[in-house]
Length: 604
Image 1 (cartoon, rainbow, N blue to C red):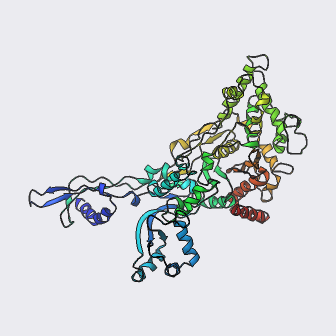
Image 2 (image 1 turned 90 degrees about the horizontal axis):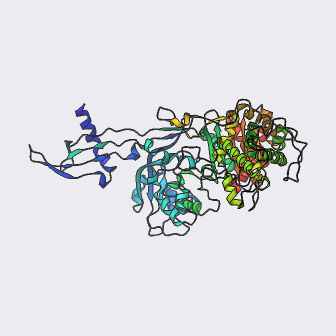
């Protein structure tokens, strides 16, 4: 066994030495007491690029792997004959100019280092074949992380050692805000598991490079773990086409497990961009882009949720006895405006169906101004106590705190406290009228995309959830243990069940999202639209929902900035993702709709 190991070491030594940096080799002369020959002690480490684990989607399609990459270094001088280079590589002249432009940090730049272009194996073979005619071109090969998909950039992330050029670029840009934008994704979060453990070899080498045994015990090699993601890469690619260059996010998850099926932060970009050696120009555009595509919106951007938050307020009101499912309220627009013209909301189901703002104004008013058992009337103390109690129940949805998704950074969102309003209103004597925006999901409430999707999953499950996560299997095992822990809200399951008829009615005739119904293919969707007021431009569009309503298999949250009404902008994207996941295709009835959405996503 020892002899076999020795020859294995000898055969690999030349390769491993090429994978080692100077600080990984220790040249210490040692004299053989028997022969008097001087050997050199060396310590060689197997480079992590050779043992790093892969990223696979939920159906075991490889998304990221370490593979040989061919790089063609172009001469800095004299001027390059792009036409001849195109003929050599099999590219047209437009492709040559585009690829070179993408590699430059800005148009017309004179690079500090030679421009490198990534080549396929076939293109590299052509260069080798005609190398004699191109002595000024240098073809090199190295192992690097290779992305087999163009989707899922904020999830897959990058290997930090391969993204150093991006880090340097980000520090130089005003919008770069390096520490805010940095998101290494799964590659960074699970780096220790992906990297595995190095195998250190300790050969004794003579002057000719021959090995003569070892001078210390070799350490055991351990292959980096493969990570099996929760993503459905086909669904991910489809969802990214729906959002494209629009600003916003889409999060789809399986409510039964908390597994994230699709995770879109738009505008979208190719995941290879941040680490590829020939994408400096594209990175510069991303850093300068006014829509900030590098911001990981579902995890890091918290916004007012709008009318979708009426679901949470209704659940809390039911739990605390402020309303019953049969409670009706008049659409009194003297309290707050209502953009929907509808019949009287004589029950909670109709209040949700029509998304009546005055209805939910009065729901929340009952919560905040109700008289606790220990008090006899609506007082300052009662309002403070009721708001604190409301916040306690709402926080049990995982709001105003991080859910713990397996990504490097996550924002907690925000829910106001009584003390917050004391300071903001500069008095403890604030009234419900000064905080009523909470009733319609506006004002001081901020939720992330992950929290919005998880909120839909909680209702689908009638009160419980698993923390959303992106890795369902590590090696041959399951996810991290904390993702197998079931979390319960403080709301009874019966009160969640009371919300579902109203959510189903939203998608039926007369509901705010009736145009997005999937009844034609036999799928009952439960949903809620939201239109978020925006003082700085067009309103934002929101939607949360799940399907099938009676046996939920997918929950979706969509948020599109400056897109207008949730019913016309966000709901169509959500239901088509549901349909694509549940059926595998889009019905002919919605094909024109699909083409129009994708066309708009490409144009913006």
